Image (tube, rainbow, N blue to C red; front, top):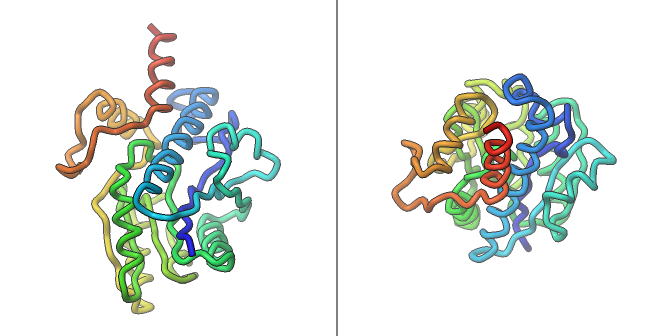
Length: 237
């Protein structure tokens, strides 16, 4: 059966998307950023199909926002609406449903890493296909994670986690250790959700590789984000 690679996202709606960025860039630009990031993360998943058979999925909210979502997600991606109030419930519920649908492995990725190297995703798929039980974690530089891969439903790794804090990754590791599930970790990457990481993104797109990039990481594609940022720069010039 196909692996499922699901983006955890909100539809890019002004005032409801990238809310942490609104004080920095305004609600309209924050929504445009969300849409561009979603397009580029979808493209990373699509390019991973060159090496693996997988199904792209968008796990989204709110209900009724499908047209806004479809403008940035390929038509062959499945849509899965999850409106749970707490992120851990969203992650567990979505992964449980995808396994129930018959997928062999489930990878959940965030929608805030438009330059994520496709090799991070294909490495996660390879680790999940290998024999033995494990979860795969992609550490983010802010103490969270940009990716989690599962071989079976595991409610525990989404329970009592301090989400969106510097302790998210460490607590998730502890949950896995508590239940005896081995962890395989990928090389780190970053989420774009504040002024510092927006600056990092702009620098990367200008050709300055992040210090945590691997030698084999290619130049980022991120076509939608490049275009959107260029348009913003031209209008502000």
